[in-house]
Length: 145
Image 1 (cartoon, rainbow, N blue to C red):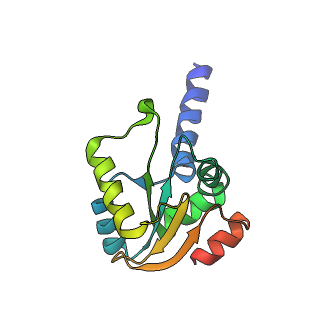
Image 2 (cartoon, rainbow, N blue to C red):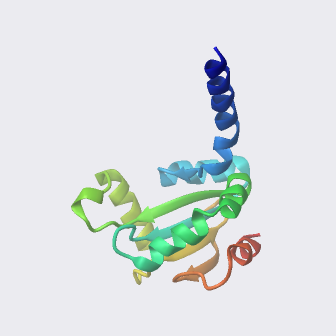
């Protein structure tokens, strides 16, 4: 019986804290725009090559996956990753690939990786970061503010 109580308590604690450790990457650009407009939030659009671009992998690991960025983005941003994996085992659904290619045609014609943009809720570019961000997570968040 004691084990059950401990297990129940653990499940409740995890359910309470889990949302603070998860990120809300949008799976659809149309949904990202709608959410940004509905919630009056800016959008972070990141172009990455998740299985071949070392600076992209570092950008995600050191910045986007940090607790500080997750907390900030969950409250203040809508985030979308336009990923361009090369390995067959990491290929995206055809509609997602098409969507990402359309975004690249509009926002990343030169094909820079990583490329991170801050957009307003209408999709207008406010700021651009080309390559791996050189500062700290806190400096990156300050620029996003």
